[in-house]
Structures are given as C-alpha cells and as structure tokens.
Image (cartoon, rainbow, N blue to C red):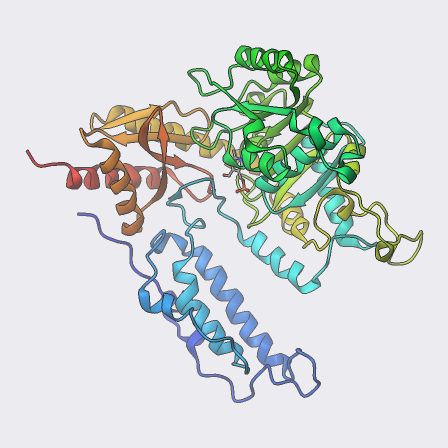
Length: 509
Ligand SMILES: Cc1ncc(COP(=O)(O)O)c(C=O)c1O
C-alpha cells in the first residue's frame, strides 16, 4: 500500500505552532505616515520577518516530511483569480495567504524525492543570500559599486574552473536557454562582423549553418530562430550508441554544406544531454571546430559543473578549448533559481555582440558612473539583479570541493538506481546511466501508456517526482539526480512505488 505523504499545509503548523496565522497586529506595520512604503513600526515588521525566516528554515529542515508535490485544489487556484488589490492589507494576512495557498503547492524541487527534469535543490545559504541581495536592491547593469565586483569575482572563478584564458568574459543570465541564445548571437556577429548588427544578417546570414546532435536541448534551435538564422539552419547530427554526437557525421555535414555554398559557423556540443545525460566528445569537437574555423559552444546546462568533481572532470575534458560555455549554477551548483551563466573565451568578441552606447549611459572615470565596462555591454539586459551574491555565498560557504562531492554523489545515486532496475525483472533500463540521469520503464505490452500513468501516480502520491522522456521511441521514466538532499532511500522509494503503480495499471490476466 502506498501512503501519500501528509499534507503539511504551513511550516508553523508542522512545528505545532500557529503564529503565522495570528490576527493582524493592532498597529498595521504598513500604514506609513511618512508617505513612503517604509513601515511606521519597524518592530512589527521585524517580528513578522523573524517568523517568516524561522518558517522557511523549518520548511527546509523538515522538507522530507512533506509530499514532494501535491495538486493545487480548485479552491486555492480560484483564490488567485482575484481583483487587483487597490487598498492595503496587513503583512501578516498576506503572509498567511502565502503559507496556506502558495508554499504547499510549489514545484517540490527542494524535496529529496524530486527527480524530474533538471532542477537543483537550493540551500538555506542561498535563500539567506537572496534576502540580502533583495535588501540591497542592487542593479547590476552598470555603474561603480561592489555588487558588480562580486559578479566579476564569480566570473573570474568560473574562468579558472573551466581553464579559460585571461581576457575571457562572463556574466549571469536567467538560465542556460538565455546563455545559449547569447552564445549564438556572439558567434553570429563574430562570423558576419559588427555591421550585421546595424544592417541585419542579409543574404549571407541566411546561409549560416550551425551543428549539434539530435539530442541537443530544444533551446538551441529556438536560439537559432530568435537570432534570425532560422531553426532549420541548425543541422541535427546523429548520435552514437552512447547518445554522443557522431563526429564523423558532423564533419561530413560540414563538407556537404560547404559544397552547397552554405557557411558553417557554429558547433554546439552538449555536456550532459537533457534526455540521458550524455556528454559529447568535447575534445574531438574542439579539434573539428579548430580545423574548420567554427565557433565551438558547449551547452553545459548542468554537466559543465562536473569540472568541480575530481572523479568526473575528465568526462568534460575539452571544455577548456570551447569558445563559449553556457551553464546553470541553479542546477548542480544548488544555487536557488535563477543563476544561469555564460562565459566567452574572447571577451572583446562578446562585447562587440551587445555593446550599444547611449547618452544616458555615459561613463566617467570617477563617481558612480565609473567602472566601465559595465555588464550591460555583454548582454541584452540593462536591469540586472544580484544573482552573483547567492552564488558567491554558495561557493564561499561550501567551497568547490564540497559541491563537487555533491555532484559526484548524484551520479552514484544514478548508478544505484541503474543497479536496482537491472536487478528487477519487472523493470527495464532504456539507456545506460552515463552521468546523473536514468531512463527506465516498467515492462508491459502497453508500456508507453502505463509508464506515463505511473509517473503521474508518482507525482500525485507525493513520494517521488521523476519526469518522462522518449528514448529510442519508448516512453521512459526519467530520474535526474540533481538535488543534494536526495539519498539512496529516496531512490529505493521511487523503485518500490513504480512497481506498485505498475502492477496496479497492468491488465489483469
Ligand atoms: C542540456 C540543457 N540545456 C539547456 C537547458 C535549459 O536551461 P534553463 O532551463 O536554465 O534555461 C537545460 C534545462 O534543463 C538542459 O538540460
């Protein structure tokens, strides 16, 4: 019998306390006599803030006691079709609504049973750093202030992590989708020249071709589309039996396109494919790109941070020869969402693709308008939050060795699941666990339907949250171990629940 995990509605309730639903204080904290949005009574806000902080720490400490995920009741969803609030409401009441209606129904990726897609678990340290960043409310588009130095510090650490040369540039973005898009834009401008930014990509741009394996993440073809090159200009190269790009086929495709008077300009290698966690032969891709004069970009959304693990680093060898790498600190780096990053080997090329002088962004050599170049010259965002702070806190408080250990542990969990699947006749492995992802299924004559149903049941039971994908034409249960909280017992719970739900869905003979 599979018991759903208890519905733990509010963190305070799980502590047996009721303070988060206390009636509003006699003095409403947000009734300013000053005409500002600051409270008249800071002590009231302080007391409420301490409760909120305690609640969230409790939430993380006891996350295992909750369901991984639970469906949103209709009544709760309906509460969020409300009118625009015109008047004020007490902070206590709004927070109470948060604890009752939002917190229990979030994605669940903080939970050790979360194994879906590729989601990091976040940490209490990252949460605290987010609070500090919000307090400073810094805008990292530009100007001369310390938060930008923090971002520069992290960029320098990233440069060292990947063995990139001095003169490379890096910055935070939302996620790898954005970082991949920016890399395509930089490679495009590097190929067509800066004028293309003024006059458009023209006929020559229409002849540009990029290459990636059939297993590349969908955001790369989307990037080609958004960059005006067309999703169809991305050549999908077949993969070998280990789901890695077939480098010989890549070389043939490049020759063929050149023969057809097209212009190859970019190869995207994957360090951790989204389906099965395959890592392309990055060294071979670097060599091919070098010989063919092509930009070599690595989509390392989660896999790039394998460089932090001595056991795994060799798997991404060749990444140090890339022209650019996109990856997320919010995945294997465990930094709370969002914290994507793009590093470009040649910082000048990077700047040429985005810098756009404007009178209102005039630079000085002293004063707040000093500190050039500004981050806004390296990407499309002028307003930029302080993502660097939670990453800086994470890197400093844990250190890269500990983060590397967590990364290696998630690959060990994948091997544990692989062994359990191989030992269980009712289950079938659909792809070898290369990194941290295992694709398997419950054996059945109606396997596609049943495995999709099993995953929905797993979600609704609150026990585990894997996702699905299609491997070699078969619907697979896909478990991606990213969250640092996941343990072997969570993997075992996934296997046991899969067997029970599989049995339940199987036609009775
Ligand atoms: C290989 C790969 N590339 C790109 C992405 C997109 O990253 P993001 O969701 O941070 O935009 C993902 C997301 O899981 C991914 O696994």
